[in-house]
Amino acid sequence: MHVSLPMYDFPAVRGATDRFWAAIRDALGKGPPQLSRGMNVWKAWEHPDLLLSQTCGLPYRGRLQGRVTLIGTPDYGLPGCAPGEYNSVFLARAHDPRTALGAFNGASFAVNSSTSQSGWAGPILHARSKGVSFGKNVKTGAHAASAQAVASGDADIAGVDALSWRFIQQEGGFSADLKVIDVTPPTPGLPFITALDRNPGPLYEAIEAAILALSQTDRDALSLEGLVWIDHATYCAVPTPAPPVV
Image (cartoon, rainbow, N blue to C red):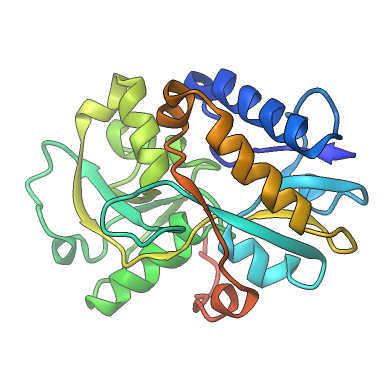
């Protein structure tokens, strides 16, 4: 059985993530003793013996639908979002004189991945709705790397998942050199998934029980407030822009 939780596996919360999986395993009564780390996310998500992983809405609707089963979506208690939803923050350098998204027309944009809802699709569609078109795209490979690219001047602006931004701020460092200038509308959050032929019901119950079994310290560290059900149609109704040119 393959198990991974790659989407928010920041170093500062890795211990809490391991304890979360241990609690899920205890409630489920099966599974490997440790999470798999370091595997390409697509290989992890499409593993033939997938027990549990977490993906993003864009990979789900763009490639994984019909190939995996939705389990449920964690609620991270993000401001302005309904349970199970999330959004992105637009980050610029703290000392950049521009204070509104409209002032960044033609600016260079740091994008973590062409298959990221929160780092590409959501921010780009929101910018376009405001009449903003970015110039050069700077591919970074990760939300933290996008934030770092803006802080260092390699890009002017980035869209970063709001929970990732919370973790980046907690780690300190370059986050003090950044400011939030706008946020995107909420979209369905990052769902837990299992193999297509696996019954998701026991996994939903195990994850729900594990969240309750975690210490308050670990729940706070992971920003976990609960688990909700968001269906396939809701994920697939979110629009997808063309991939970035980099």
